[in-house]
Image (cartoon, rainbow, N blue to C red; front, side, top):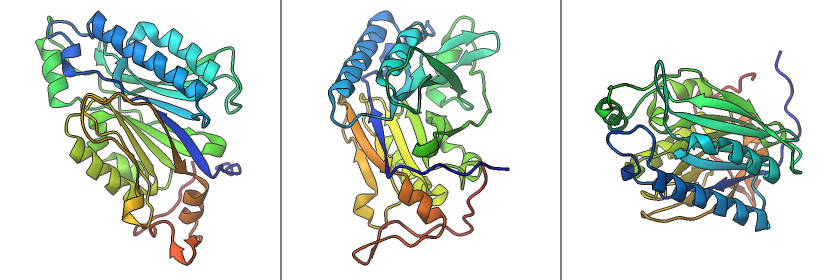
Length: 292
């Protein structure tokens, strides 16, 4: 039996940190990014957390792009998450294992969460990548000895209580045609951590999935290529891109607001209007909310 959703908040505040991290951050003969790139990336992350701490609108969830945080920085990132009181979803740098290379995201949940007061610690859930992109596979094959991605097919769905339910995927998995049917009717938000050059394709996929899965879709891509975007199924097309970065070599930190309460109401066929105008798109054909 599924449990009833708590009273949902009107909006979720999402902090986005599109750090600058080019493909040249990885040497052709080494798996992990080189030290200068790792130090630069981490300095950007720390600076962003200071900005979030001083912001009027505090983030509930913070996104950091794919393969951005060196594994040895995870304990420090847990401390930052605990001090901030926000859930942090961060892409970790490549990690060697006996079964291949792990490309994972760390979902860091402060111990006192959903209370946003500072915690003394945080727990971590790892979300793995299922499919390697072509450039990623070439990098793994160039190593000595050659290797491949450790494919993780586990699909995680997270219940964030009053902030809604969400899924997490890593870059190339965003194009997996088998995922949308599994997410559909289950989540309010889909968070995508990316290191992707084909930003136009991801923008089109984000708009498509926000309407067919019927959820908010937030892509946090490296600022080197731009293309970070947040889409909501608003009825008016100009409102759907809640946030978007166009252009490369842009290091920015932003807190964006995406709807939760009205999205849940729409999935229950409640009519929402603003001075007679429809607020959200109608539900896609055959949409049925499913128990979590």
